[in-house]
Length: 243
Image 1 (cartoon, helix red, strand yellow):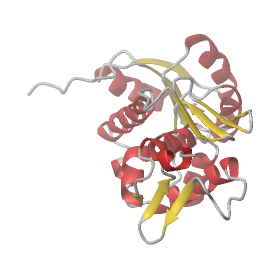
Image 2 (cartoon, helix red, strand yellow):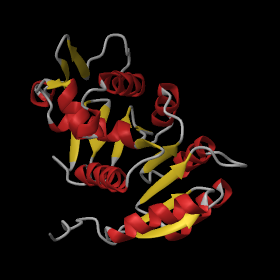
Image 3 (tube, rainbow, N blue to C red):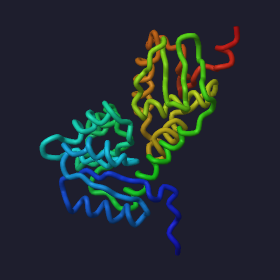
Image 4 (cartoon, rainbow, N blue to C red):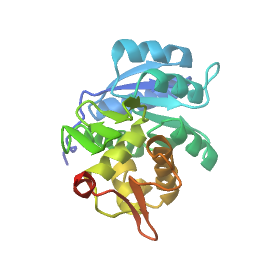
């Protein structure tokens, strides 16, 4: 039976782990699926590799000597929005949430199978590519709030708003479906991936992040509205823009 074609073949993946055996395992399985792989064994080297080689995705181990994965992620997010999947031997919920809060795109707990690894990498790349297509060039929500999806920029009161990758994908999906009520499961499947469909707390967490950055009064939102017992919807843009 032939291997399914990888639509992301030749994408460059940076693997960051201090265990050589783990790096070899990941490299072998990613290369078998058509990816290109570069590697780092110390957190201190990651920023320079990202600057010079511009990987399409980073697989980042949490537990490393010196600078750990969380600190590397923090530094990365100050300069770059490259997708990051955290690798860890820990399965505690607070570690997963911490990584997501800091801007990670996904989390894989060791040990993992080659199939899970490749599936998660493809899923994150697919979600990133999803927001490259745009519903419109520039959307004017109201006099204070504008979105330029071509430039991946969000403007509020004339100032650029810094959104983390997951926040941006969530906003994109809400705005693309403005006026429609989206269930927790729909949002999870499209923004995080099908495997997260039973994790509604991720939606609530990131809705709160967006409201704090976008709403004048996050406790009384006018853009991202709650439909109790169902999910969320972004305001109907046509009604908002009607004089």
